[in-house]
Length: 250
Image 1: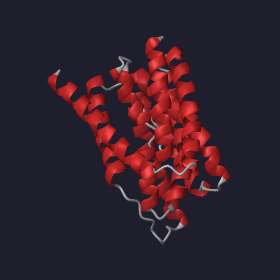
Image 2: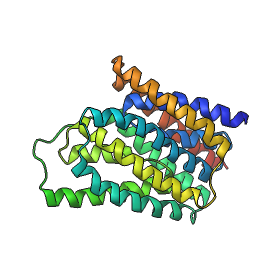
Image 3: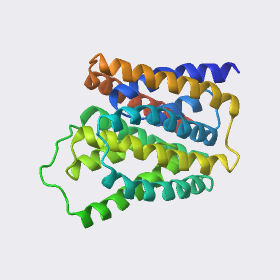
């Protein structure tokens, strides 16, 4: 129970921080859970459900503010949901060491995006048919990675949506809704294979819900999301370095 309580407190802190930065916390919680001695597949299953909880709370505000582009979201949701299930099943055929190396790569990518990516909105939007093709492609890739590594895929979807010409705020709002579905599908894929710890899930779910509420409140107080993103980027790269060292010296 001690591990579950610690995991819940950590979930609360990072969910609040990442809510300010506009992202789900799964990609940073998984390596922390692993460091606490939690099995990698259990960590993935729990983190995916936590993404659902946090993004559901955040999405309420986005939908209310009309920042969700449903025409762009629906094809991505469909493709991401299907491929997230596929990714979850594929992950069980991979060695834990391979998954950890893949996750290191994802952490480095996410950290670099947090530190260096400066979104710029394009002024010309794609045609409806191109938007559909792009949506399915984006959803398939992000969904597969979501299920495979236990992350929501938001760090991939947001920059790609912006690159296709969508306003950054609407890209974040749309992605939050998408992540709910892709994360839940990935969670089901892991849960049906027996990777669930109800005690851990209970404490971290409470931490995730409270953290999302706190993060949303802090954002309304106009804290600097840019500063938080830089801090998170440094933390992610540091965690990736620690995981790499552990994999190399083992």
